[in-house]
Length: 155
Image 1 (cartoon, one colour):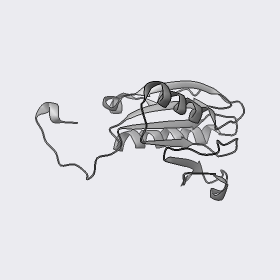
Image 2 (image 1 turned 135 degrees about the vertical axis):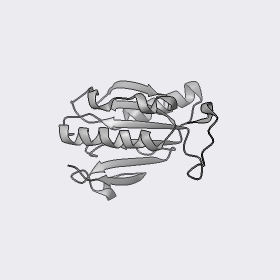
Image 3 (image 1 turned 180 degrees about the horizontal axis):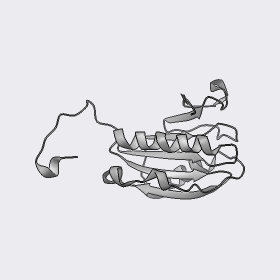
Image 4 (image 1 turned 60 degrees about the vertical axis):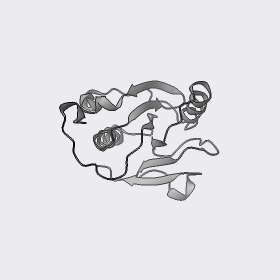
């Protein structure tokens, strides 16, 4: 981050990911409190990662896709973010969009982070490492068909 000022700081270790896709379940089953917590988690992800991020908001269909470049880390105001959606739940459309983007553009993300309560239709699998970030009130870990499950405490 500081190379432009000719300041060379030691790294924290191994380099992180270059491109992450983050999907957010914006269905009605995700309460305002949980979505607020999701924004806090996104803010933390961006604060420790200097990677490009695609943010997909999806309920039963994709409502909005936002591209966030690595250099935009400190310019995102999640306090004023408005989610699109609030309908039914289908967890498949972001994975379908990813597959289409990979086929069309050849850009392969390092990982998918899906922030959801897990109550919806899942795709059968994903060839990209997937982390499901789920509130404690969400679906049980064993019910997720693939990927890792990370529980977050809701406020």
